[in-house]
Image (cartoon, rainbow, N blue to C red):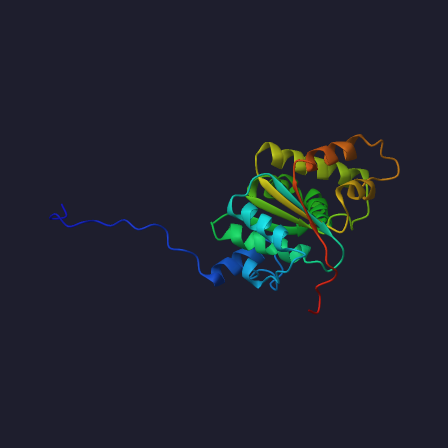
Length: 208
């Protein structure tokens, strides 16, 4: 009995900025990017429409984004701002380069923890940010791993963001080993066509 007193049930209190920072760095974010929000981005005529589209994605993550552009155009910063916004909804966000993912999977094979490491990227992250894809040396195993990762996350309706210096067409050429028959890279390209493309331009923003 509560003697007629009104019982107010409150929800889970919001996370502090410090808690979000710690959660993002634990998920692979460099500390310098873990606090980055859309309010920190420099907006001009070259990127205004792209940032608006990125905000819309962060508000309701669905499918994926493919952010590409020249060096220094703000691809990683934009991806980090998306990750920060999504994390504020208590979603699990991971940030890693593709070479970083494959290195960890190779190590996991040695120590018998491959399935655990694979599930972390394939199914445990609500949003997976793969930064600077295309810089890694292409191998058949990496190509197959990338296809499997995109395919599994797409089937599970989990969102993924890629950043790259390469356009989609150039990326598929870059990541394909010399002996590739084009089938796996073609399947990757076909699935990435479903991603929202965000092409950043306007020259390098570093030092501005």
